[in-house]
Length: 254
Image 1 (spheres, rainbow, N blue to C red):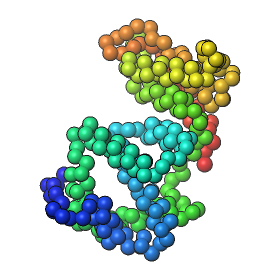
Image 2 (cartoon, rainbow, N blue to C red; image 1 turned 90 degrees about the vertical axis):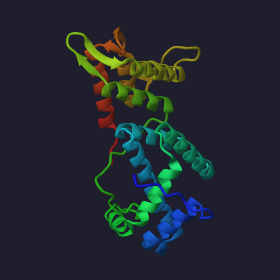
Image 3 (cartoon, rainbow, N blue to C red; image 1 turned 135 degrees about the vertical axis):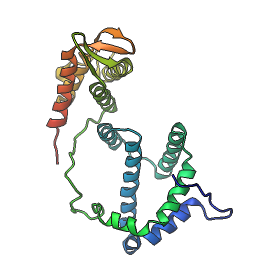
Image 4 (cartoon, helix red, strand yellow; image 1 turned 30 degrees about the vertical axis):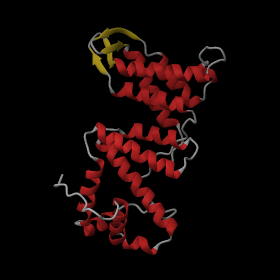
């Protein structure tokens, strides 16, 4: 990272200075309607947010699960959501030992020196603002469950699949924390979808695309502990892996 040069005393707020750069760099945006400009800014903000979580290790499958979870909820209030973005970004930066304002000032100074290169890069990106315009390789579209508890269960199941270690003659070792997380998500799912007063829901009564994941999760029972891991059967993990594959393959795709 280049040397940090703080803003001069009395300089305009960061937001205004960033807008000055956008106005100078993306002159073609200034010819569009406010709706078009807003649409482009939404796409670019989401792109940068995804690049940040990708850089910090979040995998694509979990990102897709979160997108499904968010878009199955009621729309929020924009000013409150901006506050949420700033608050969670500040907490994230603190956890990663980064100063969010320092990072912002350094990046703003950098992009002023890269105006032509950034214009060329933006010109090569998909034009998401034009309806019907191809936007790169086709992306799978899903009809996710409207139930957040199922999406949490699915994410926990994917974590089991991604962290397993095969042990010769013993089974499969899975981090104990991942197994407990799966059990907790499964218990929440059963509590919400089960019978009044207790009792897990029969699998035949579950939505078809959920039943396989739930069935596979219920089979994850550990044989014994091994250091920080739990050892479970090969067949149970294979069933869960197969259920996830079927879930991903059978839902509608665009």
